[in-house]
Every structure is written in C-alpha cells, then in structure tokens.
Image: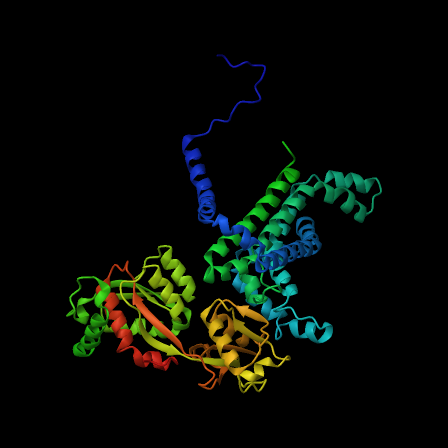
Length: 270
Length: 255
C-alpha cells in the first residue's frame, strides 16, 4: 500500500485527536441551541403563526430596516475603510478604535448614546427637528439608524482588512497607464476587494437583522413602525412562547439562507 | 428584637400550611442561615434591595440574592429551571402561571399594592393634569406594551377614563417608559407610583384619581425547588411584617 508518488496533492492533513474533540465541542455549542429550538417548535401551529399579520409586519419591517442599514453602511463605511487602510494621519488608531467601539459597547448603551445625539434634546436632534423636521426616535428611520450604528463596524473592518491585504501594484499600474483616481477606485480597487465587500455587507446585514438593544432604546417599540423581528420575539416571549419560537425560526431561516447563498459567491465555489 | 421577628414568622408558617416541608414553626431568626435567591419584578428593585439589606442585618449569616426582571420573564426563567427560592410578581396573572406550572410550594400571599401615575418631566412643562390630556396629538406618549402588566393596567385606566392615547412606543418594561420621559424623548407615560418615586428629580408624577386608577396586587410565594425553606419563610414573613414600612416608603400600599 505504498503511496503513489504521482499524486501527492490530496493527502489528508493529520488531525490531532484532541483538536477534533475540542472542535466538536465548539460545534455542538452552536448546534445544540438550534436543535433545542427545533425540538420545541410547535410545527402544527407554526404555519398559522407565520401568516399572522403581526409576524408579517415585523418581518417586513426587519427586512426593510436591515437592508437600509446595510446600504447606509456601504455608502459611508467603504470610504471610511479606505481612509483607515490607505491614509496615514495622526489619530488613525484612535479613529479605528472608535469605529469598532459599537461592536463591544452594550447595544442598550449605544441606544442611549444615540438618543443623546439624535434625541429631542440631543446634540443634533433639536436642530434636525427644527431645520428639517426630522424626528428619529420612535420612527422607522430611527430603527435604521440604530441598526446602522451597531452593524456598520462589521463592514468597515472587513473591507479595511481586504484593502490592506490587496496587491496595490494593480492600482499603481492603472495610475501609470493614465487612469484617474476615481477610475482606479471603481475599476481596480473595488473589484479587487469584492469578496471583502460582499463578506462585510453580509456580516453587517446579519448583525442589523438581529439588532435588539439599540433599536428598543433609541427607536422604541411599536408594531409596523419600529417593532422589528427581535423585538417581536422578545415581546412574544412574555405572552406566547410558542409564537416566539416560531418567530425566531423565521429569523434563523432567513439569515441562514442568505449566509449560505452568499458564501459560495464570495469565497468562490471550490 | 427576637420576639418581634418571631411573631410574623409563625403567621407565615400558618399561612403556608401546604408548603410540605418539615421546618419547625418555632425557628428563631438566628437559626436561619445560608442564602436564598429571590426572583422579583423590576418595579420592586429599589424596595427589595433595601429590604434585603435590612433582613441580612437582622439575620446575621444569611444572604439574600436578588434577581430582578419583568414578571413574565421571571416566570419563564423559573419554568426553564432557574434555581431560586422565592418569586415576587407584579401581577396576579404571572403568579397564576407559576401556580399552573406547579412551580410553587404553597399559595401566593399578597404583600403589597401599587397604583398608577402619569410620569412627566420635572416641572411638568406640558401642564398635564390627568389622563384626558394624553389624547392630545401634540404630546409624545409612551406606554408599556399590552403584553406586560403595566401596559395592561394602563389600558384599563385609559378605558375607564374614556381616553384613546396614541403611544409613540410600547416599551417592554416600566423602567423604559420612565427613562424615555427622563431623557426628554417622551412627554408623558403611565407607570407605577413607585417608579416615579424611584426615578428621582428628573421626573414627577401626576396623580390619577382612585376612580380611574388600577390597583396592582403583588403576590409572593416560595418556590417548590427552594433549597433553603426556613430562610425563604423567614424572608416572606419579613415582607409581611417588619418590611412593610420600607415598602410604604418606596410608594407601595401595604395590606
């Protein structure tokens, strides 16, 4: 049974047993709660729960808010990531730390911080209301802002990492061939970091979809206006745990479908 | 000191005849020791924190661990196996859920009542005088969600007053309603008297007349899985006895 020397490429990596055991525990840690949910799901009543107007309203609002948040994050987050990756300036480390702060900040605190800026008595809130008539707390726009605040860092750090690891000689070549800065950005840089862009956008979207603390603190809870799926789940737990489980499964199914669907696209089917 | 504490303890033991344990009724306060965990509704936060400390002082060697949350959340936690000794609910329906689920060691006892009040910013800048003002379209009103007790009570009070309020938000707990008013995002909300008291100088209360008000009953019960029944009983009897002035000081009415 000597190994044929002609095919050395497909040798399985030797896996230390202990490593596999730890990996299995790690996987079980993620799988078991999911199984717990599935086992407790009242399948018979699930369909009726799903068609109830409350669920559909919350789902629609969640999709609208999470995709809007991702769009806003792309518009402002990609330039921010580029700035952090490409420019050297004093205070860059501080700026980067501030950018990722929402990832570690308890979302409820983030919500209060947003109120202190965009609330009626906030730094900008009064001015926004008197000048543009924009009120963010208790509105869908507020829910989108809250989700953007919490989710955008995921996009920024992913895109920044992509920009840093990319080969800048392509950009240099394009420049020497006479392409303008914008052309280089649109035709060379962004296409090259497309995988990171997609990964960042998907992570950002998934985080926005699950956002709870900042939304409920900043935007409040009202069906059809600011009550997204996670809020609906939380309230359903109070009165109707079965409905809460069904709602959670919908949330899980939607996000799993998107994550799996996009995975191959950004990693490339291998 | 000893005598004063013994009397309510025997009362509690008598009330809790179905507790089904062998703890002697003559347990003296110094005999209880160890620790218990009390699951209590969030509106009890301030009062129970004080009562817990007072109780520990009166019963050296005992520790009262307090876990606060929405009454319905607490029931769900206990149902899912959270280990504790006492459950104090802000309403009867949630205590009934615990009864129906067979989580209790005896019958619940009412230890306090709470009333509703309109919470407004300090100084009452919008000049709110009663429930009827809450229908004003220029006013930002927040209420508790209908699923939580304070939301249900608020709906009852508004119905009694014949007022239709359009809340900007249905908050998930009563503290969030107070904080929205304290932060200036909302002009008014309906909360418990005790919450206005606990919130401090940033807000004030506008009384709701008794005819329109709703009285919330607060039941307490010892849990079936209690690991320290003597101490749990001593704490319940303290709530019904020596702890009453403290409850009153935080705005509760005591039976």
